[in-house]
Amino acid sequence: MFRLVALASGRGSNFLEILKAIENKEIPNANFVGLITDRENTGAEQHAKNYNIPVKVISYSNFSNKIDFDKTLLETVKELEPDLIICAGYMRILSKEFIDAFPDRIMNIHPSLLPAFPGLRAQKQALEYGAKVSGCTVHFIDEGVDTGPIILQKCVEIPENCTEKELSDLILKEEHKLYKKAIKLYCERKIEIQILPNHRKIVKIKN
Ligand code: GRF
Image (cartoon, rainbow, N blue to C red; front, top):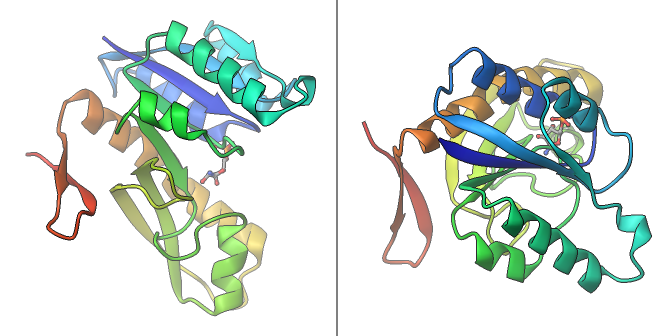
């Protein structure tokens, strides 16, 4: 069994889709051993409770500095002994210590086709650029912002006169399918990391 730990800050719709995929055996060999949120009363917390997943709230507002927060987060996650950490709408930048502790074992989903439009409000960035397509990307987290090795991507056409909300909804529908697919591949040990001559780490999917 693969031990999954989720990190979330908000409504947790991606987290819920993964919970459902585990429940209906689409991902047969994984279990969530914990959800960690950085604030009280998130949608993600509610989903975890409905599925009897242990929740730890490490509220950022209870800490006087980021160093102590980061230390507590790292210790808490280490105690859960995860095989894979899943950022599901987690809005904080992870510390270098955290990333170093779990090399190529932290996944994230981002609502654009990286490397285009990293960072916040990627859907708005795509619209303001006049892009005709966007999409979503599941990637491993490295030290940069949305720069880690790309695992899977899905393209979405941007309709004319689309609003940020409409584009977010179109992309979110694809996110819900893509994230569980990537986690399934990981749990089937089909994800391989390669290093290119230019030192870039990339993902190869095994058959
Ligand atoms: C998603 O759009 C995801 O791509 C981004 O944050 C959003 C989280 O949504 N990283 P949810 O909490 O999974 O509903």
